[in-house]
Image: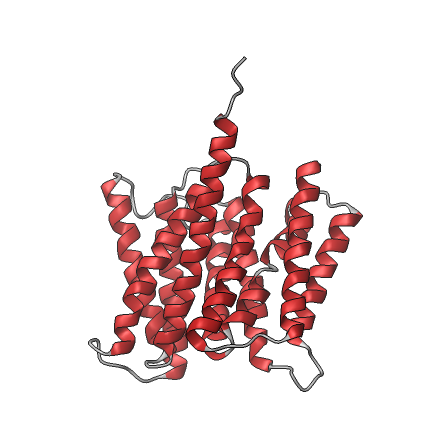
Length: 292
């Protein structure tokens, strides 16, 4: 009898898409952080948002999809928009003003917050072992932040707020109408990013010439951002989520490597220990969910 390898092949493809998505997200962060060193952060966000918006609008039109979906203004999408703006503003500020390595490490706690939020929003059941893993993950975040100690960086709280915003967006996306396509969700997501950038730009002020070096850096950020979004979507629609989800944590590996190579960062022992605890907690939560 010939074994059925279709599930194995699907999981392999899904895992590869997830790794590519995490690499693309990390490269997006690198270019945004580099661009923000030369031009106003709000201008970077608006340019990035409008560029991604145009790409997803073109994709939707090529597929014959309407841009304004009839259910785009429902309650779930309104919450998604609010959390998207919060996550984008806070996390972009975090990667621009704090070490990329620590901001990326804190972001890895997002699945843990989603798991906790699913209990409150969707009444999902979580056992004590999963609650213990969630609690351990938050301890890892505290080790990176170190509140009350000399090494505490107040701006790192933006990474925490960004992580909470993205977790809320993921929960709201789960409640979004199933009839909405990836391209349509991408359109609304990048609209929110443009609005978030406008908020930051209005507060920050200033403008850089369109031909400047900082503006040039936003081009690759747009390309990697769109590629990351597409790869993530394909990953979540290919294979088993319990098998594919752990590969999200490759983003932290990529971030640590690029933070050292590009920005000369040197994560200290507490940051590395906290990162390991967050990743281990997330992997254990996924494993427990798969057993259930």
